Image 1 (cartoon, one colour):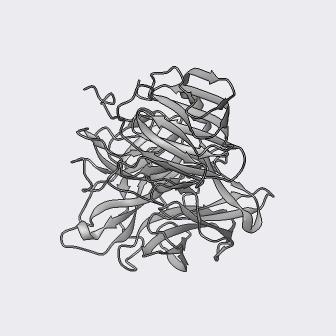
Image 2 (cartoon, one colour):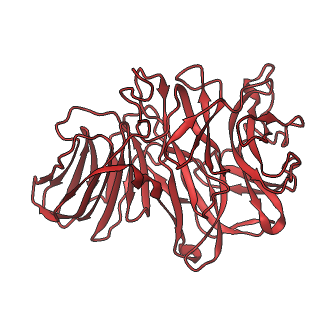
Image 3 (tube, one colour):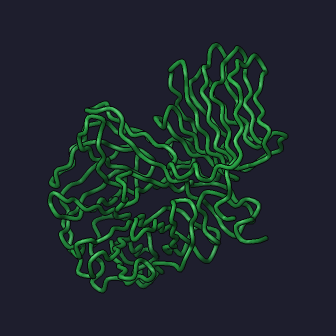
Length: 448
């Protein structure tokens, strides 16, 4: 079948031309382009031979995959990492050179070596990459220490690296030239391992807060002065669902937004030339202040550019067994509505034969979990106890992402379709409940 038109190919989520992918890596914006690197096995549709794939976009949606950026070498395969723009030539490769930091996975070298952190750079806007001849820039600390995430801390004119150590332990390092690094703080993030992210945001009262994030969508909010990160909240879950993992934010974003993308781990893509997909990009915001601050996640505004045909349903009360069945055959959807649960037991959203159950008695959302790997909190999503709940569901050929009450709760799920008559329907389960502001937008493919 024609490339990107395969049966189970996601149509507006990123997937590689062929081969296995997992963590997003090296996310940066430079010279008018969004760069997306990703863990890739170019030789098979199962994990292995970790290489950095590379794609670019003008709009965060339409991706063009190019040559592989980082190939395995005698230090091992290329595990996860991050990317930055070196505006001030701190590393000595030239103004505005692009820097990638990655883990050389020594266990996969011959002979085996410890995991170390390495640097590569580009002076031609990311077309080609050169591995720094002084690698590694960070030696081995313990275990499979990995996944360096870098950010520039302007007040102290230093690069800061967040690095995973082992178990639920991480550390912070600093450098003024991106080549020599000093470890200065260890951090524990309960219930999480791998793939740290570390970035500043502004809360609702205008105060700078720092987010320390781990692979399972849990995070701490605190203060950072360049010398120490001081957590001010408990570890909090931001990304629920069965399949959200290894999220990372873009660096050098031109308009001040905090943008993030995840690996949707564990989806099934039987007999396809590719395996696995990424989430849609989302924008993070901070709500509240002090110890009550929390992250929200919502689809990037660019997603609305994919809308084609729209269906608006009238506000209505659903009686027992009542349904809303929009007249659409399109499998690519952006659906939103506001529900007042009333005395109903549940609301069933059936997506191409798969059930998303909003259980109002338990106040939880569950969705079919067909994948071979369940991440995060196992697929159960807590629902707010408010009398009115706003829901947005972003639906592709093999995934559904849901955002509740303006992104206060969000979750990622993968699925395969089952037998169905209606592409999408809402069905009331006992009692009465009211559905208002129902909008369904059919979406265009990014591969057309």
